[in-house]
Every structure is written in structure tokens, then in C-alpha cells.
Image 1 (cartoon, rainbow, N blue to C red):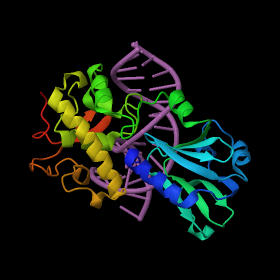
Image 2 (tube, rainbow, N blue to C red):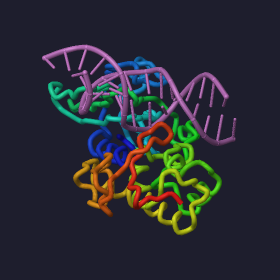
Image 3 (cartoon, rainbow, N blue to C red):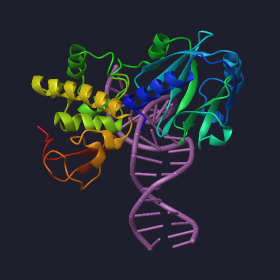
Image 4 (tube, protein in one colour):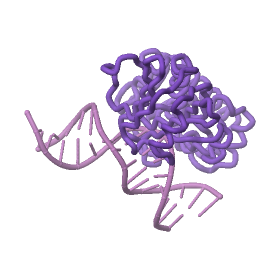
Length: 263
DNA sequence: AGTACCACCTGACGGC
DNA sequence: TGCCGTCAGGTGGTAC
């Protein structure tokens, strides 16, 4: 589930807990989580250093270290960070652990191993190498959004979730954004009229900021949101019709057939 | 160049 | 009770 809002909250958590503390040791509990770096190299790069900054681009979280290299965290799904004191509190599925000189630990938790940890020489370099699009919240203005939609004949949902077009939106928030904008996920992006495109842009900004505000707790999302009832047969929070599930690009896609009609 | 599909991984859940 | 199949999700690779 970690999409942009969740990763933004991890970043804030990291900033509040893990900056400016000397790293004494790095434990790689499962090497499969490392991407392009060996446990030895990671240890060598980090031991004796500290994290000095925390940035985010799309679903990626990057921590700047005092050596100038950056640690790249990707959460895949069902992952997160936990800062804790006693080793008895070690969480399940802790794949990498950073020990700090103050006795605390930072766990990189990643249940399904779909996430990764790697190194990069800088934020811009990383974004370039991955060919990521602008960050959905911090880097996408309405004009850029318009151009993006205009030149793509893919479906609206596909454009929203394509990280090379826009970075940060995954399957779940894409459904929410389309629901809020009352746009059918299969609408071709380049057919979205001016008003619909404006609605979509506004919904994108609104959904992501509200989700950040909710702090990853579904119960704190606005009552108007689809996410809490995102299952076939539940009632649309707007009109009460049955939510349906369709298969789009191999992903489960939920929508209200009454609010989000094609055409 | 763009799109489509599968593999990766493991917990939850439904069916038998 | 417990086994088995299926689904969930993001990304990267391969095939078209």
C-alpha cells in the first residue's frame, strides 16, 4: 500500500527520529532486499556516518548521509519504518536494521520483499536514472498535467499510475482520484475535456493531501472517500449504488458505475 | 516507442 | 483442522 502519501509520512517519521545520529552498525537480515549493493558495501558506506536529510520523489524515499551518498528506500507494499529502543521490540519482517550510537534502532520493515534498499549519488541523478516523472504533489502543475494527458492515448488510470509520467500514484489512490473526479478509469486520457481534466487535477491534489493528513489511517479519511469501502457490492459514499470491480491492466479496479460513467 | 503480460514474494481468505 | 488455490500490490524484465 505505500504510495506517495504513505511514503511522505515515513519521511516525516524518519526526519523526526533518525537524523544526526551516528550509525554504529547495519544489519542486513535478508539480502534479497538489497538492490545493486552488497551488505558489506552498505555497512562500509554507513558505519560512523549519520543521516542528514530526508527527501521523497514519488514512492521513493531518499536519505542523505554525511558521506554524501544517498540511501534509497522503496517500500513495495506493506512496509514501513520503525524506530525503537530495546531489541526485544524488533518488529516482524525487519529486513535491514540501522543501529545508532544512542542505543536506538531503525527498522526497515518489508513483509513481501517487494521493496528495496539501494544507493544513489544524488536525488536528481536517481530520478533521471529511473526515468521518473514529476512528483505528483510537488512537481506537477496544471499545465504539465494537461500536456501529459493530451499526448497519451492510454486510459486515464494507466496515465495516473505510470511512474514515468507521474511519480507517486499507485493502484489504490488512482481509483480514489478517479472516483473523486467522477471519471471512468478506462476513459482515454486524451479525450478528457477541459472541465474533466480540471476536476481530475484537483482530485489528484486533494486525495493525496487528505491521505497524508490522515496519516495512513483509513478511519481518518474523509467520509466521501472510496477507499474505506473499496470492495465489490459496498455502497458508493456519494450515491449509494453498488461499487463494482473490473480488471484493468491486470489490476483490480473499483468504481461506482453510476458516478463514473464512460463517455 | 508503446503496450501487455509474467515473475517476484508472502499473508489473508475462501472453498472443500 | 488443514490443505490448496487465488488474490493483492509495484516494479522490472521480456515479448510483441
